[in-house]
Image (cartoon, rainbow, N blue to C red; front, side, top):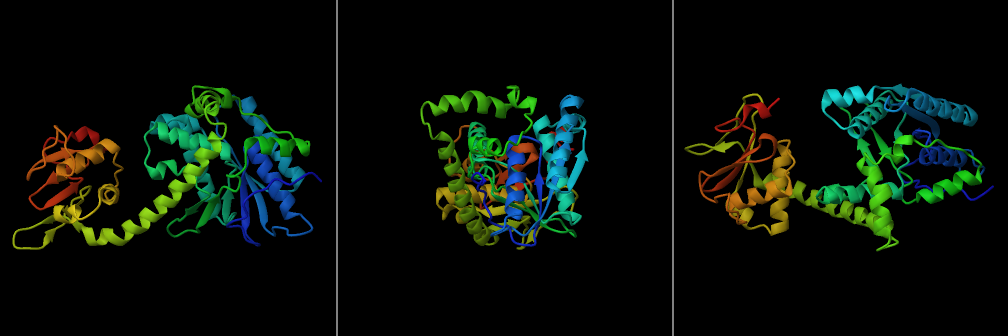
Length: 365
């Protein structure tokens, strides 16, 4: 038999129930076939329960989507692998939730994956993201101005924790594999696959990056795909290190609510309001990198993600950056992303979700 397709066996143990997300495209078909071969091998067999999952998104013409579903059904029958099918109207969901089609499709898929894990059909869902997908993702994140958590790209494992339900994982065992290797593997097995017609539509950002930007970048660096994938790995390690450090020091830095006269602190119990404070002198003892991360982590505790510009405004309010539009004095305040408010007192910097003063009430659901 021709050479097997290598995939990561990290986080795969004998007895696991693995469910492969199969669209019918080359990547997912190759992953399912590679796992099936490894599971039925005479030596070093995986020893897992193997199934597949397919989502009928309702995005493309019905004939094309139905053909993909029929192809996946036939493949699973041929391999004697159980198939879980989910039908959804992604365009309707996107319109209702004001999402892009890509965002809505992803939410539908991952909700289905969580259901499969919660129902006990799978311990882990395996998706066929490749090194090419990783490079595209990191580049898209860079273009959008992401922080290290963003440029960490597609993670090899994502834990799914659901309150009161079974937990599991999303695994990406092909992240070190090139798309060209996958197609060569399928051709060696005479295994056909389906090509999604939307993959060529440059109305989608990922397709423009794939078909226009990355080919240009390869003329500057032929190894740009590996370079971007390496950057993602470095960013994941950096982020893991920072998160551990923040978990250690945040309880010592963040103060709930507001100080009250005579000592102590008052915490609001009004629905939709919460606040957290940090002493300016404590911030002053931190190096710039840690200071920035502490402020962003404080905002995250209130449910907000700060942009680079909003973080700079917050630093300026605390007196650690200079902006003509922000005064670093007691009583000064700024309004940040989506209703988050920051206020400076003589001793503290307070972040609050309270609806006060000039906040636009229409910004709140």
